[in-house]
Image (tube, rainbow, N blue to C red; front, side, top):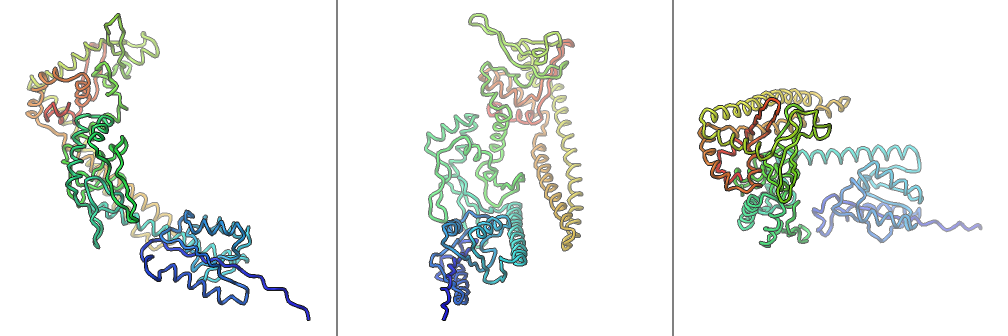
Length: 513
């Protein structure tokens, strides 16, 4: 009698996964349930030579959207080492929710002749119909993952727009109070005092590096906390980047940020709005000049402001030296590049034109008519921009209503999903722009001033100016003046004031400087 060849063993590896860590501490969790179902399936195939490998390939708390999972990596290594003949999962999406990633896995399975089985979804990957079924299932799994991601993003956006803390790293000055209603920020009084001192330290130094040095000398660090896994986090010395993040975080004035939007928050403010805005103004000015104000060694107070009217270009600062004496000039950059005969202005002595500009500022405070005219021009400029913003806000509101109507009309029409996605994207852009417009409108509204405010502040300009260091004088002029146009041929110099600078002059000059 002819003896049958021994039956080949099919070594089966069971892979299980759960997206979150919730419930994994239980004695019998979802990973155990998935494995039990797979073991029962393997037992039903024992007659075919199927055996269950003892190694567990469990990924608890890992998303199926990528392959950065320890158990998957270990499984792939065992497959490449020839230790696995079949991979068993409870459902296809336990192995992957990405069609691209799944295709990569199947390529490795095919190369090593490894079968793939889903306990609850029956198909055979050795046939074309089985592969089609598998790809359809994976397409729906990826679609489901993307829908879940969109819902999560929408939930976070809605929470932020209502001023709620939607998670993320804790910040210095606040503790996170977790409750069934959701996490909330509560003020940590000790850290809050540090935050207020950090803001005042930056205003005293008016630059990041000196402020970092002062904060480090006090021994203060970034927020320290313990993660859910018990690992200590944060508590690092401040650097330029972390200090800048702290100073620009609207959470400290009781607001929350979502992308480019800023909304009133549920938590209490630590820093007053006036201090916060002063810090933003200094940061913005330093950022826009790339540190040029700090490098202004010779106190060129019109650096970056002076323009040649005939050539419509900037005038740069330079000097010539004779012995120990320096003679400073502003020169037309067009004339410098193309020849002195191309420009009627060419150059102007720095001290002379700077003195003229300072005298013009002084004269505003001494002449009520000039004060009134200056304030009138500044108000007209601001009110014009406010009118533009108001008109744009109305247009955006109308566009938002139209897009909302389009979205409601297209929901539930699968054949028009492309139009629905486009309408939703337009709506998102309109909402972002509306938030920016309203924020600018609110900020600009605060720059409107009255005659008596400017006259009172400028009355202090003369005595205060002479007491300021050259660098502080340059900062004050940069804050107040938007541009100075010089035309040597006509013998004219015109000053354009910053509306926000006019408002700043209504505060004590020593604070501005």
